[in-house]
Length: 432
Length: 100
Image 1 (cartoon, chains in turn red, blue):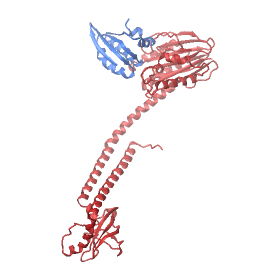
Image 2: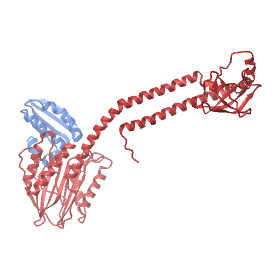
Image 3: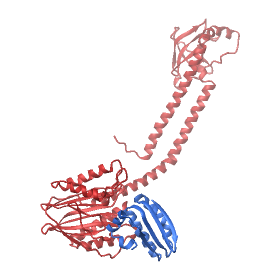
Image 4: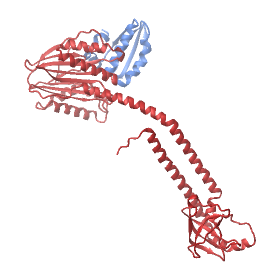
């Protein structure tokens, strides 16, 4: 079950839980120490009680001040038996038992001693066993009682405990008020900010995903597949691929920045390529336009490595244009790519295309530097040589999707416990 | 990543060692920025001990070069190791950034 709470509701819930815990802990602490004290007193005074009970009458007859400072209370005798029940009231008529005990009867569990008119025994007061001493007044036998343990805890120690309890409650109240009126608004605004930032990143991430091709259609003349492993903070890897008339168009690139701006730039690049490709713009011109697009936004300090190509299945000819991108592997060998400037640095830079003839069964591997610059736990790079070796060992009958998956797996095992440090884009093409 | 800045006969040499990756590039930029902001400076980036350069760092190099040129100066990279040279070659930046 997932709770969808607002910050205020969350805080309220926390305060309630916190308050209950504080209240509970305080309550039980008070009771625990009281019980300890009572028990200690009980053990100390057990024998004295017998004497005490017998002394009561004598003491009162002499008119002495009560030597034990007992709280006086009226006791309502329910039955003249050992299972007497009493209501505790002090002599002024105020109920001295805790509020929730008011009007409740306290059954006497057993009597430790009984003199002519006085009783000393055990009773449960406030949930704990206490000594109760009942002794009669001369004018009304069985009316006044002393509650020994009860008096004890509501003496000086009780006062300390009560102050302690109030202090705890006061602190809690201050914390609660501060939380509600100061912390909650701060949290709310920072949460809102974070939410906005997350929304932006999410939109950017979606843009990146929308900018790449997803639906690689099965084609009788070629097989094509690509995979993207984007980092959470939105990177700028991009690829496009699919049939354009009688040719296969493909492109892979890497925008040199991360974040929302990079994702938007990538989306624009993708849009430019998509629309120009429909209009039949040559590769070199298209590359120039992409470069110009980035140059027009110098504030972002971005650039883009990009490799685009057309493959004609009829003539087996591949035309390609490279702007500073990683070296494409063709059947395990690196493609001859002229070192042309990365797109987006020099306005007006003129790109040119190159051509190569492929064979049936040729496999192409295009990738971004997230592949070759993937790092293992000991900080070594995956590197071109390893990639080349990997490609040479791939079975010829494997599909492009299988190749992509296998390479991703290879990279994961190479990295080991090291984290992915860059976007990874892989594109495999196989000429049927 | 470590930078050492020395000035001799009107040429400011900034030796960069270690790696210029995504994490260290920002620090690199902050360290060299004061030099780049000066007018008519001739800066040489000595990469003899630089082992790796990321694409983000390349972009920063280009920005710094543009900044220096706008101030009437020059910025070139020297003593590039093969692994880093490969990156410059691949990205077509050798001609504009590396000193002959």
